[in-house]
Image (cartoon, rainbow, N blue to C red):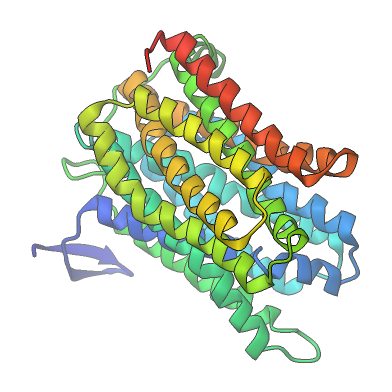
Length: 408
């Protein structure tokens, strides 16, 4: 292992040299852990604790998604203009400060503002970090993006469990454990910011290779991306995946209860899917590097559509579990190739804008899915909610085939 000198706090500290990619993965784990533990399961409990109703819970939960829709593309675009490192530090400052504001809330509107601010962190970090990976790697781009996604999934998976434990064992009559939880959340955010400082800058080892100045204006940058049917259709497939995943994570518990499953059986179905995605993404990303991405995206989307059909008509624990795991595999098949495919199609100086466009469209799909699913569930049945996800996936798959003129 190599060593290097890092200037921190006015002194030089000798530290082991770690690859920029590994640092990015560590940042991703800490950042997404911090973001997730702030809302799951704490956020609905905090809102109701200070007097909010279910409508307030839903409104506040949507604030961070709204931030992602509005700011992912501008953040990625700015990273092409002023550099990835500056934008990463900007997101790190939000990760490190936002959690502590929760400690002082006394009204619902304050939480809404904090959630909007906190959402800026992931809206900036997601596309910029993925653009960093796209800059660093070409031949192994899919595999490396898969490993980075796995790191973030570890943070996303561990946060709710630890959050629940903290709330259960540190609750008092006055705080209900929220103080301890948001201090832990803040510590993780500070850890992410500290790790960002360790990223090398402006040299051959930088995760932000020097990019020729991009003179495209924001409007022209949007026009360039929107006019590329390959990029937009791939973003559309990702939106369909997130549309369906939003339906899955929102309505699977209700589906499970309806067919007589216990809460622990429902938890196993959800956890098994997340674990499946985390384990399979690097492998499937490597597969896309070696065998091409379009066919992988097509087949993964079609399989995901079949899984949503299975979920619509599952009436036992085993069929629901099998459908959940297979859906996790299909999501990995698509997402391990789609982001890399968009990076392949975009210019080196536009990776940030391309990843930002992907992030914004994905957030739209993830936001709209549960809304459409809820309307269909109320108007017809839960079965129709899952069928809408299947239909969206099949439409996007065959649209992708048509636009790419790809034979299955």
